[in-house]
Image (cartoon, rainbow, N blue to C red):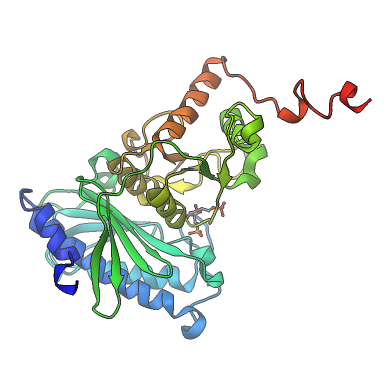
Amino acid sequence: MLTRRTTLSKFLIEQLKNSPDGQALAALFIDIAAAIKAISAVAAKGALEGNTGSLSTTNVQGEVQKPLDVLTNDIMLHHCDWGGLVAGMASEEMEQPYDIPAEYVRGRYLLLFDPLDGSSNIDFNVAVGTIFSVLDHGQGAAPTAADYLQPGKRQVAAGYAIYGPATVMVLTVGQGTHGFTLDREIGNFILTHPNLRVPEDTDQFAINASNERFWEPPMQRYVQECKAGKTGPRGRDFNMRWIASMVADVHRILMRGGVFSYPRDNQSNKNGRLRLMYEANPMALLIEQAGGLASTGRGRLLDEQPQSLHQRVPVVLGSRREVERIEQYHREFDAGTDKPFVSPLFNERSLFRPEARA
Ligand code: AFP
């Protein structure tokens, strides 16, 4: 079987053979894959190399950094800055974009990434990941901060790696979403999940339900209806999952279906929690390329015009019909025509009705 396997480079050469800058994009993916292999190796060392715990520094989001946040950021930068493929890079961990050092040739792509998504899970050995997005800058002048502010629909490629029991890289160059598993003995990513498709329907949702009391009414309505199961308006039972690593939650949805949401709320996530450029946009492209939908709740995520590099955004993505339903609930709420959820515990068949208790 070893002779028949499709390696990442073979796959990219095939997929990009008719694209004018396909060779450069394929070469960039090979650099990103090398960075991901290095990150996979350091993540797998766990506490052995003193990479657990927190640093005394915070990132631009005001979040306490982990040693691996800093190390993985450097790994991404220095695997991708030297090859004449990238015009500049921006990361969740850096306030300003990274300029390509003068000794290297500047390329045409802007690379944006979250080097270690879910890093608050690293001390507990829960799956974490790297998420990346590729924009076209064109050959020429050094990019300004404004050059990065392109809507997600202009991404030329996107992907993530998940560091779980296996390291898997999932990517799109705009022709479907495909998964590759790292064969550690050989050191190659092998195509194991071609043409991933997100089922249109699902009975699974992923959300941090501890924020429920702070959400807007349409999200409360959606989740309460799911939780009411067979006895509620949906007439069937739902299951809930929350890993608190977006890569792991989205990976499950790409494999099995489901809907993932980090909505806005009226407490600490007024604009949502996830970052538009480093998390939401690349995941939205991967999900759309797999037949799912990605939304803010009030519009297509990939149409969102970024105002700043580190901005946050509400996210709803996954199985098409559930995302459509959540958008519908937002529309109805905004128009004042929504039907608030009534718990089956208090409806006409409820055990809690006074006559039922008498
Ligand atoms: P960290 O990288 O700081 O762990 O944040 C992870 C994340 O951005 C995303 O991967 C999760 O879906 C989300 O935050 C989890 O947020 P909660 O901790 O509020 O559940």
